[in-house]
Image (cartoon, rainbow, N blue to C red; front, side, top):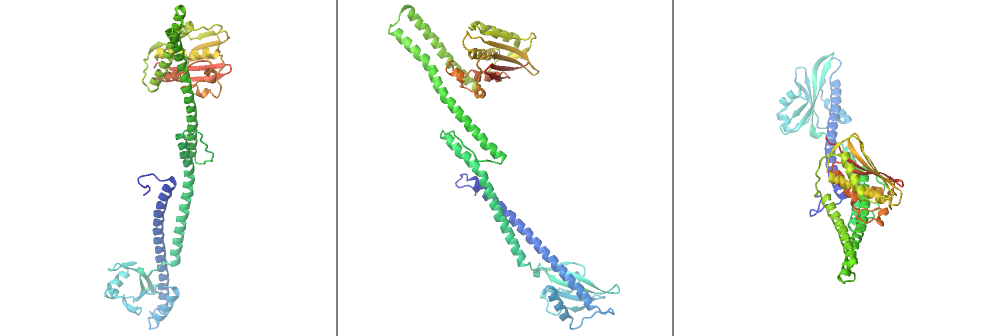
Length: 475
């Protein structure tokens, strides 16, 4: 009903159609209940008027001496009062004396069915308020006692059929007008509200199509009051901005990787060509070969970094945890890093507590993370002649062990700090000065999480940066 050839329809059409059907069913139920109530009110009104008529009949047929007067002109008087009071014209009236004998019956021909069953009908009318006939019709019964000096001297019985109770045309017109107005108003309300709801979603759809086409400029300026729709639209906008940022990084990565891989390949190609053409010989030839080997190792290292990162990103690399004295492990890592570095005027301080704490980690992965952080700190300071300082601080908190790597280098710009752990991101301070693929910090954080901890940039400014490695204690 709501789809054509199994294709989805618009939100506006879907909900307005559904609401229209729901509204129609609801109004039909309301109409049926209202019609029943109007019928019930009409019956109650007819019964009340007939009861008043019965009381007036009782007053007229009893004289001051307690006699029941049922003369020939009684029916004319009663008909005049009946018409005046608007009592049903098919009203059947009986008057009984104290012995239960019928002493008066409204003149006229009774329906054949009533004539045949009159004795039993009057017997039932003495006790029942309604009488169900064999034909299925219902007769309402009104009884009024004839009294004189508080003594019952007879009874007035009035019968009228349910089918003669008419519902006023005006009432039905008002009901139809009311239900029709409610239906139109309800449909208009849901239509305009559904339209308002569908417009921002349609904007998201159009923006998504633009993104598919490669256009990440999503402009959604319409104010939205609904919290869920607001969150949907602006989360989508943030996603689009993020995709645009990642696309920019991807483009930059492609250029960077191409440059990083091309440089050693070009160098190796040129040097090998020189050796092959015998342009150089002897010691110079050996030097060229050493340069080729060095560039080959650098090229191999970049390829390994890409492969390792990709494997780790898909969970293909496992860690091998074992019990380690974290103080001893950090001291050994710091010593090994210091040996291979040309620190010059840069001071390197290691702060380790005397207390021995055992942790459950992969020592090789911890060394990879700290070595990468120390190398970054060294690069942040710059030349070896520069006066700088690097601190490696191990300390314990209530729930974990933490290792801070501090430097007093140039720091990371505020706008780049949220991106430092993104894969392939290279900051403006490194881009033109240090070769690399921008995988170090992202790879290090992945390893830290695999160890059950985390890696974060705690602070960074022009006075330096602090990176913190968090490792869980042994439990």
